[in-house]
Length: 134
Image (cartoon, rainbow, N blue to C red; front, side, top):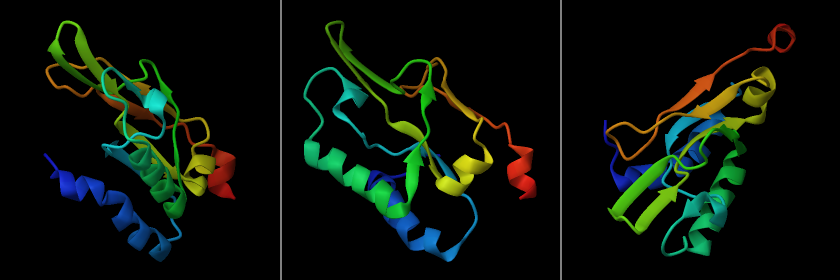
């Protein structure tokens, strides 16, 4: 399913509305179309700093943190010409602190991109049973 750009850009805004209504642990995985740092992009034209700051602030406002990614750092690639390659880390797993505590041993890995311009990210859960039982 393709989510329109304006909806993707409002996902964290929607989370800000929804997350306070629940005390459950949250994990949100997908293409956020946002970068958290300038090192999240390789290639031409640096990502605007105000967009990086806005994405970081929205995550903080939602109480979400980024899970580390194992494997290739970039999850999206665009090849215009052989010498014009752009790669970005757009696909992420954002979690609440409670979720991270519950699944402290989880692994988020980056696979190989097939026919898509996005690579497959896989989240492997390893629940900490002592955290589940309280």
